[in-house]
Image 1 (cartoon, rainbow, N blue to C red):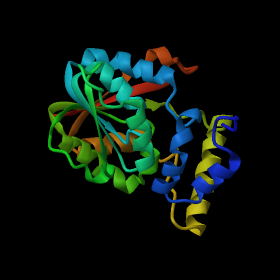
Image 2: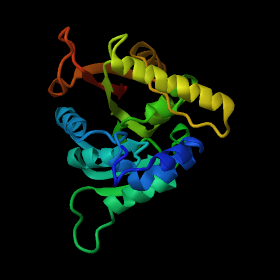
Image 3: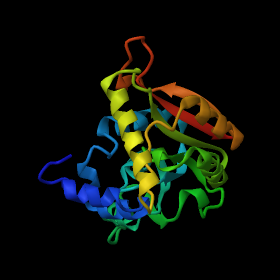
Amino acid sequence: MFTKQGPTVRELAVQALSSTERGYDLLAPKFDLTPYRTPDRVLDAVTRALGPLGPFDAGLDVCCGTGAGIGVLRRVCRERVTGVDFSAGMLAEARAAYPPPAGGPADGPAVHLVRADARALPFAPAFDVALSLGAFGHFLPEERHALFAEVHGSLRSGGQFVFPLGAPPPVGSRAYWSLFGFDAAMRVRNALWSPKFIMYYRTFRLGELLEDLTRAGFAVRLLPLTELGERPDGSPRARLVVAVRE
């Protein structure tokens, strides 16, 4: 993260002491140079898993950030892709990555970008597929049902809400303690400092997730993303959650 091109320690400190929205506005120009961006291997695995679930005409990238998910949706949607985010800075980067065509036919589906809070999406039921990548740590557990209900209301009947979900690290592993320590530090920071910066890694547990999706009106299944590898017990390291609006 602390490379010559990526954010400096000072820049990350300023971001961490800002609100969630302002923090991402500040980080946006260098976001794709940090480990926070979804890795290409995950994007490719999700793209390949989505292929058999289509065809899709219109896709929605929920909390699109700089546009990694937009790239996935443009590979599986035929007509249009919409990205929504509350950070103006992140949307500016996405707009630079996917500018409108300068005359002549567009190379792939048209991209539309909308600034809005995912907890109050401004869409009618107009999408065949909704995707979200790495954003759910920015929502408190009590907000999750409302978030899922908003996505549900933006999908046509039969539309699918999809996102990858990694298996939790083994208890006591280095990764486990790293995530535990990060969440603990964020809780202390938010207790002592305002405005709050909401980012937690260990609040998105599978059982609670499935319950919230079901309450929001989805029928849910899990597809293994086998190309991302297996755990020592043979279970997949990551799954694609497929939630269908019935």
